[in-house]
Length: 187
Image (tube, rainbow, N blue to C red; front, side):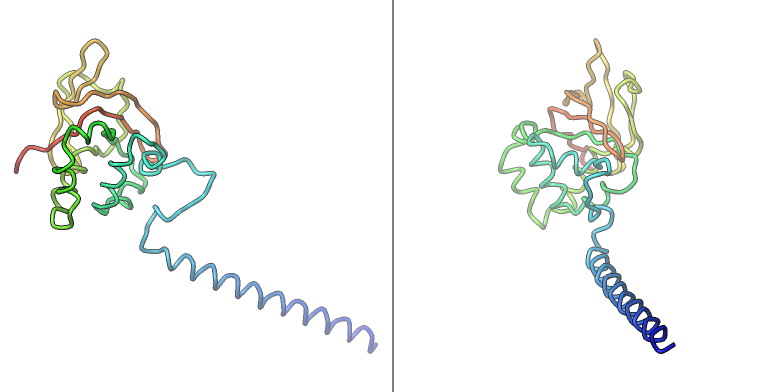
C-alpha cells in the first residue's frame, strides 16, 4: 500500500511540476505578444502565410524608396491589415524622377502629412485587377482624391503620368508596379 501511495505522490508531483512549466511558458508568450501589440498585423511573422502588400514591396529591390516612405509615414500597420487594397507602387526609378531634394524634404518629420497624402493617393480600397480597369475609369483613393485610368492598346496609364509595368498579387490585395509617382492635386 505504501508503495502505491509513493507512486501516486510522485505522479502527482510530476503533473504539478509540468503545470508550473506550462504556466511560465504561457506567461512568457503572453508578454511577447503584449510587447508587439502596438504593431498590429505587421508584427505577425511566419513563413507560411501569404505576404501582405507591405511585405511584398519590402521583398522587392525595386521598391526600397517606397518601403522607406511607408515606414516614415507610419502606414505599415494600415497597409498590413486585411484589405483588400490596390496599391500603385512606384519603383525606385520613378522616385528618382521626383528628385532627391524633393524626396528628402518629404521624408522630414515636419512634412509627415504631405507624405501620407501622397502615399495614400497611391492606394485604392478594393482589389482591382488590370482586366477590371476601363478607359476613363475614375477611382477614389484613400486620401480622398481621384485618379483616372486610361487603357489604350492593352497598356494602362494612371493620370496620364504613370504606366503599369507589372502586377503582383498579395494576401491583402494587389500591387501594380508603376513607372511614375502619382501626385495628388493641390488642396
